[in-house]
Image 1: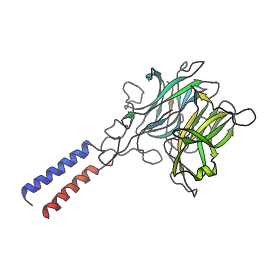
Image 2: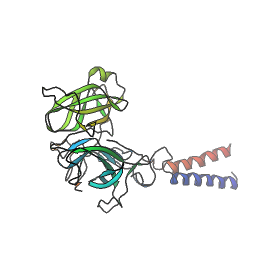
Image 3: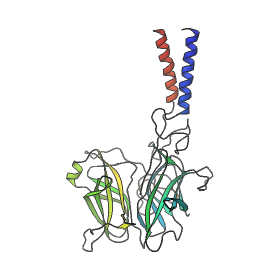
Image 4: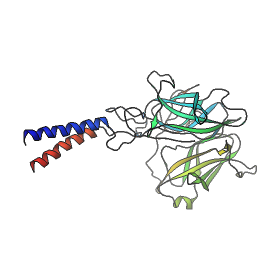
Length: 351
């Protein structure tokens, strides 16, 4: 090959390598650009949760709830770096002052308890609050001015919900991040009731609760790992992946389900979550989830209300809906592409 050919090939390699470094998501990893989405900087090791499963972005879900002990329950969250869940007031539809926060570690979490300031919830009626994920700027102290919000697909990772005060808490928590394998039943991570009631499963109908497909009765109090059987015919008709609604209803006084669900701000206390249908009972797509706790979380269900699910890491509360998600790069893709470009050019030149 001529000297001019070698120079041209070198420039092609440099151009492709520079392009891959400038855009580490060139392989199709949406949402990864520097650290703005909470993902690692170029060249860093991709973030993993504490069970070793790869995280694909920041995520948060939070639902309507009755707050009986001064702590808001965030249903689930996934963080690509250590950070915080903060609860904000809302003012004219926008994010207002912070009224509570808690530190959460990198990984997946379910049932994050966030203490909120006294007086946030009115004695009568409900308020609209917003849960937001923040990354830690490295000083170990939460500051909404210096700690950046974590982003998902270019948007801030946050969820808006209604809350009201009550003598006891009312909430239902399911892991909305990944589908749970099911052979005909589903397990809810946590249910809180201030009176005897029922968890009723509804089919998903255009993102709203549809037909009833399962139910179970519960006493007042906090319940962990609540299993509800699904209607056999309904389950058999479902695709490999589908969604359900878990909605809380009061008891009608005779052991039956009341006509109307428990509501906050006019909307039911409910959770929408994905399910993976498996037929042999050997589903292997289990979800690793970090359990919140005041010291070190555990990998087995905890019978106390402060620890809620099924994996390990740390989420330490400090005094103080809806969902979102992002992506990871494929390290080395740009360099490999540059090498292939050079080899392809040389092959063409030789022919």
